[in-house]
Image (cartoon, rainbow, N blue to C red; front, side, top):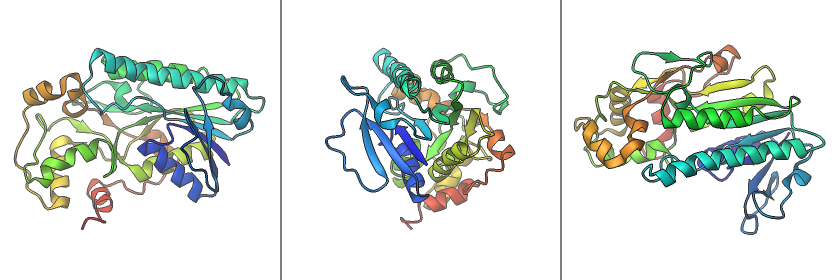
Length: 303
């Protein structure tokens, strides 16, 4: 297959690219500047979101587009300017993706549009599957609703899958990387009450699940990309401490996190119990369904 990826240089994009290339597919990464990019066998770069660029000419006839472009949620406080970038970057990239598809004579069979479990809002008691269609009322839910609405404007010939990512576990980037320092300094502990849910997924399963959604024509609409065993934050932390052979004892009060992170504290203080019903129903087999095993796999090079 020929697959185009926006946001292909991000940590999820890189993992998906490696997965696709390993399975013999050709990958076309959309970038604002390809002058400093090194092409190689099966990997190509196409300029987009740049005056004078017409990526549809180079991409006509591809099999799939994966849209992962957007401002990083985890970098910096959510100031009004930051929140505007979070929203606008996703809307702009998705609108341009739809424009490209519409401009193609031979349209892709499927659009995989990145999304997030933030759609559901937060809850200590509910379990959310893809059949739950009432969005939350916070900022992240609003972002996801508008993001997915843009993706659903794709032409009818193109199947649309909105992959709602949970907390993606990877030791190099993402939320886990930010959690590691206190544990490595022997001061790790629960964040807030510890009762909030953490719907997590190993980076390897993210890459494999996106590839699976491309290949499985029965999958469409929202798809939860989370492991089938969410954990409460206190248990998540205890498991992390166990695998790292570190103590788990110094709780961080919610008030301090609110002060330090501002509105972004919702990412660690609130959560949702999300279950990947569509992947399970479509016989996707997780490589890492168990949290302790997932941590052990991620940290095996450090042991």
